[in-house]
Length: 289
Length: 235
Ligand SMILES: Nc1ncnc2c1ncn2[C@@H]1O[C@H](COP(=O)(O)OP(=O)(O)OP(=O)(O)O)[C@@H](O)[C@H]1O
Ligand SMILES: [Mg+2]
Picture 1 (cartoon, rainbow over the protein chains, first blue to last red):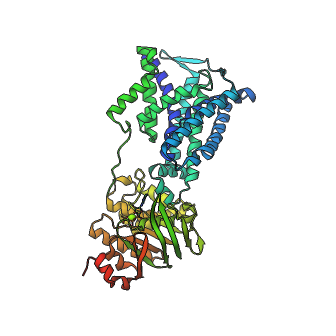
Picture 2 (spheres, each protein chain N blue to C red):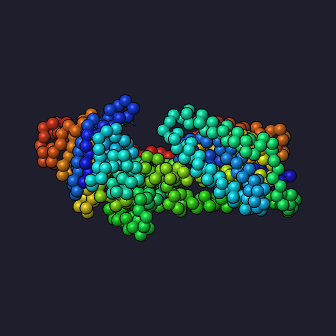
């Protein structure tokens, strides 16, 4: 039983991670908390659903199409919403991204309808059993894809020019500008990557749960717990935080009581903040005089 | 080479630069002296484009850069070692240097420039894989200057490179700045350490509360009674 719940927790951790990576990347570089991130998740799920429906594409193709769509949506949102907000007071920015969240929810209701839909794929019901653990094929796909994306993101940020520029911007935006780094380009790229990742997350869970215009709300509040746990702007922290919260939630729900499921992320967060308010995985960098 | 004409810069309501004008000619080391809060950093930041002048004009090699994006300005051949060094703390020394060369596209040139930076500052070669926040203050300063050199600047802006360094290291840094200048890079050197700065500069400006208060050649400044009293500690 324990390993069964552990596996569910890892799957959940993958989803939280894909969700939180974008949140934390965007915060790290744009300095803003994107309250509309849940709606990007929802759009990812719907885009995959409709790509499969309209083009009768198979699941992989529709996930890729959804991802491309999300990257484009990220580009548009950065240009139309985030960029004009630059330089404004935090309160204005928070209110604006909350506004964006409400707007996108309603766009979702308008385009996709208010009722939840079921995304049936040919293999959602297939599961494998080994060593007494039942592993749904879709869940296995989630784990594999997430691991691949984490490795790809790591490679991108360590080895490529744009990835390094993103890290530079998150460490010292003014210095990055002084070096001639095109901050507009980096910012656009960051939002596109963040939207792409959370969109893939949405597309990956779509075959497992009902897809609805309000599916992003709960996911988003849990993801906040994850990124704060990991330290806002901290990428490894978001990954660790995602898995800690996912596993803790699954184990508690499975071994203690399923009523506690939604409480766990916030309990973990509260304890973590009591112990280490700057986030579990933040190292304070000492300034040298 | 660089011409700053009557610029006015504001921070909210603070009028930081008031009709400030100055000029740097090719090949020179020009120092900018002034007390705390005089507007030296604001001047350099306005030139590199991260702070904006509300009026006036800044031109580099005859081209107006007053409202140009910093990325364009760096591409044109300006680079800065900023106040407080502003190195990227979680990046290695090598990666910091790469970021300095962001506007260059050729890996070969980037590599050559890193080798050149290591020649100016051999200690950085030994530290090349080290995370920059763990460098000593002096090493961080060298990194900041080396990083600014990475973009092949024609004009190098240095904002208080001697701040917080031991006297021996200050001497070292100034010697290297002079060497860099001999190798063909024009230098604009903001300093509080007037004595050292005037030893290597060809000309200088003194800024007080956002205005040019004095300007002159090295000899004129060294022998000016006001400079001696206020900046060279009397004699
Ligand atoms: N970001 C800012 N916001 C508000 N005021 C600022 C800002 N930066 C500088 N100032 C003000 O502008 C004036 C000029 O500051 P600046 O940093 O250019 O001085 P400085 O000559 O470089 O001083 P120091 O030698 O201490 O570095 C000062 O009065 C300072 O308080
Ligand atoms: Mg200053």
